[in-house]
Image (cartoon, rainbow, N blue to C red):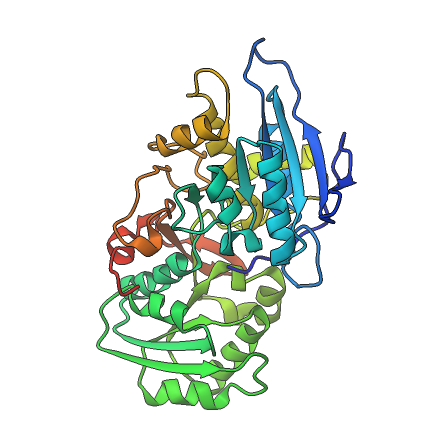
Length: 387
């Protein structure tokens, strides 16, 4: 999932340094406030694409985690910037192993999700936007999982003739959408990145007499797609993941965005969910201008899960004891940021460790998301091994 990025994190009471020979920027912050004496102490790492040359840096994951832990004594939070490169991500994992951290919270868009082998070998739990197969993973987000929700959402809206507009090379996401429901027909149109004209692609979907269109493209291409749909006078339902509908896209679309169905695996950051006020307040206590985005919501929820697991540990908090405690979580609450979390593996090996297997549908009205559904479970869809 691609997330709108926020502002650089300004970390109070932190000491920046570079790992000798690794070149990875890291910081450490001691969570502080009065709690009971003798509270277990441990180190927690937050790794993410905090900077880099790509478009999707997510530095807001740091104040999200630090804000969640504000007032908790005995937790040393280490942050590591993977700078959106696989080499730096492995360096961050190496540091986590060397420092004997109890767990690693992985931010959105981090390459750690593509290769967390060092953490797996060391038995260090990885929570957040992780892979969905490793024994140490506790995944709260899966691109394919959310995309399956697009298919489910459109079927719920009454569509039986599906149209797909997707980027060439992302067939796996289209397959997830298709696997979300049973269709009378499916018409697909693949487009290259930065396609100059979507008219032929939309015309192909029109020829297929589609009743709905699932869009899987870059945010800027959404605007082109909606213009082409309007020009072709297609009266269809349109759905996509909410990360594509950032404020810039919604502003550009104006009233044309009304009726778009957006799919999310957590509360939409632009919705009126009560938990968002809590997240915003805690983040701004760390960094006043920190934005509440999907990336920060997932990081904050991951921090809450770590705290929930830690509360059940008797004795020292280590990677081994944290792994056991996280595996024991059942119906753990994140105050509605994501549905109640249970570390119960799915049957499909590809999603075995994807535990936030839920989606929620919103409809865009006057530039804001309004809930269409409550959270619904995607287990039956994801356990289909063709997904």
